[in-house]
Image 1: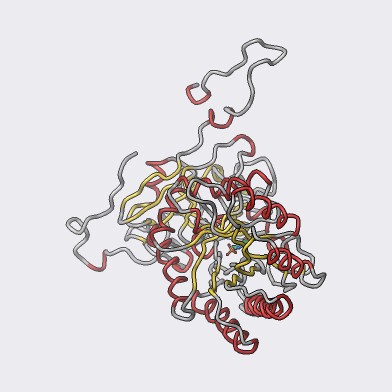
Image 2 (image 1 turned 30 degrees about the horizontal axis):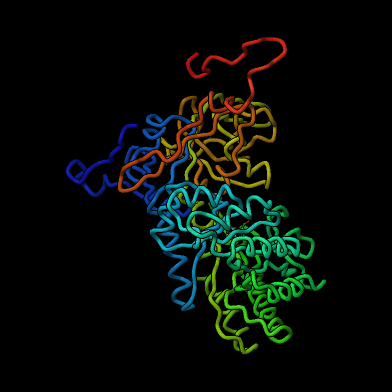
Length: 477
Ligand SMILES: Cc1ncc(COP(=O)(O)O)c(C=O)c1O
């Protein structure tokens, strides 16, 4: 792949008036995004359309400076307010070997939810001890493999049911070493977010119920087993939250439950994790929840609860996912047909619900821009649709754009979280390539899927009608 290098200081324009400027709605774009004097979007100094030309379309571009900046902002916000604190990135938002290297470098822990996520991270050199394994149902084989990685197993298992607790005790005994765990409790805290990403209300499938006594029973069993070490309590209220009140309430609930366990069972928990859920801005009028406001709400609630309940300050671990990666990622597409009906202007692009199912799943809203006409005023409101065979395949329902032309690059910012991990091969369309940019250079971190990738898992032999139906290589046709 070509190394794309932007203007160097030597050939950079001498006149400051020619210097690239921040893009419109800069708060939606990566920190290094700029617009040059001809109106082109630059990502880390490189024209977005050049990236598409070099790596193909559609393309996901992550800006390393923004990733690191977000990781540091959250770490520092908590370190300044709570001495024993850690930020664990929720890998479900987006995970890759390249990202694991950054997490390690920036001192973040990792929340994983499957043997797949644990396996990817450990293969990338991320220590299993720094991983917390979540999930409401961790299949037995996955639990066993996560506890028995080559480097000694994951650091914490976040127990979601009594059934799982019993399995863990058996696995601890089998490996001859206790399992360190947190209990995930259902805090019964409602949140204002899409119903599919509310996770801490009374009727959620997640966690051990406080009201029915399941959570206390789990603590009792954990304390009684020599193969289990109860270290902490966890809850996660929901995702993409802008109001800090539920986050503070969850923190208080966990602290109160810690005090109950001390009083009823004599059990002391030393770690508290009120999950993640920090909201990000997807559209121009939205504003992200600032790391400092988030940290202030949680540490304030924990401090107050510890004083009131006379609890020793626990270690505090937060788990933002989306807020660390969303704005660092930009999705680039190539514009195809533009269709004008009496009702709607449709602009079709070469991606869609296959690489970004969020609009279809959560009615998610996005902003869009033509990457080579960033400063041109919009002339119409268009519905940006994908190439997939569903009417629900809409990326942006009302995008204010200049009239888009076939072949142009369309950029959608805030595309770094919950796109690629949720991407599918629907309609047998290959999933996009991913690049990271850093210091004006781009590097491929995931190659584009090929047509052969799409069919390689199917069994082609032994079809009744044809003795030899194995296809020739589709990509070479
Ligand atoms: C247990 C847990 N922690 C953290 C997160 C991360 O949430 P977000 O990406 O909204 O910060 C999730 C998301 O579902 C979660 O289930």
